[in-house]
Length: 173
Image (tube, rainbow, N blue to C red):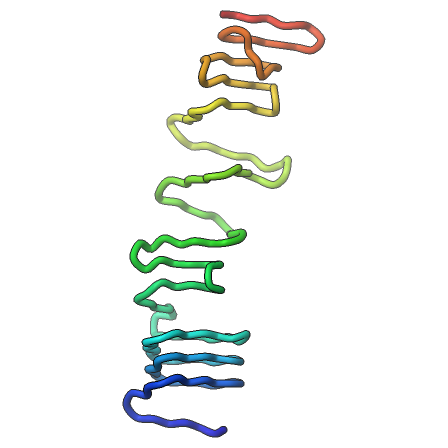
């Protein structure tokens, strides 16, 4: 209990319980239980952990800097220091506009919009769909492998096949 003051470099493990405010700090391991604010430079030659509490690092730019990987909850959010790639385990929620300056690659089913009043606008010279395209089950179907188009059917029998449940079918080859 009380203050610890040191001039120079302090080595070894430091644990703090409760509220603490630290200036520049160099440690081998730092464990924080409670709320801690560091104003200045934190150099950690080992691990930094906040066990159920809040640990805030504030530098003059308002940024958190790390020379190694940055992990949250082991693997929930990870930034690889060598590539800059980020991994998020769970849902990423974004409020506001999102601008991507490179390709967006989705490796699973993808939903755009969450309500029937939503719309999707594509501002591009070309739209490339290398596989089959199905709109509203069978309203419009394009079979990419055979080059056939079905309207009202997902099994077009010719180059253009229009099917109506009440009027029958018309096929153009």
